[in-house]
Image (cartoon, rainbow, N blue to C red; front, side, top):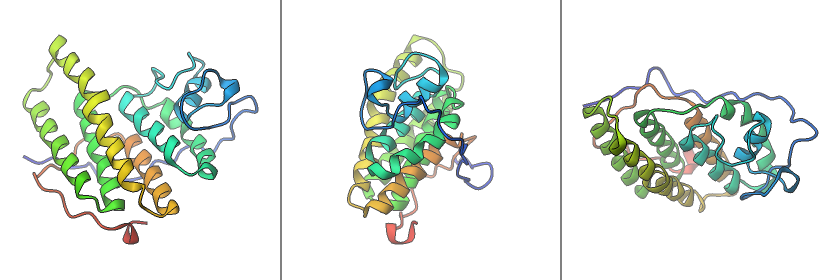
Length: 210
């Protein structure tokens, strides 16, 4: 069974609007209130006018995890550039369980392309297997389905993303930052489908990934 992307992958083009003067300054980690600063997702919640949190309801939780990891791992001088992603993140509403897995696969593909990590390839294959299972059970509902997604998202999905980010840590800072931002682009590019074949093409090294 195979799934195809509808057209070539294209990075998002976030708004270049300047942040309001009252907006918090981006920093790593969680913050108690905007006066102390904000991570990228807390910044999104601030602009959206909702509760100050790194999990605002306007953004899909898997996309939010990618945004948080990008925020916490880019070099300090590059972090402010992430502000331009706030409008796109605020509009990245909840996705279906299949869409989340396809998003995870797309993000892992980017990380593999930059890092050349075989561990990321293994994680991608595991995500592929989940996608196949979900495809064989379309329209699944009920508490078992909700519980499965509730466990997978902060568990397997988040650990896979954290492992991908860890694989990028050995790259030169500029390549690492480019990879993290490309992962965020991939997370925001809402997929309609993705190829699964049981095998993933050998990822390229960061020397040819830029």
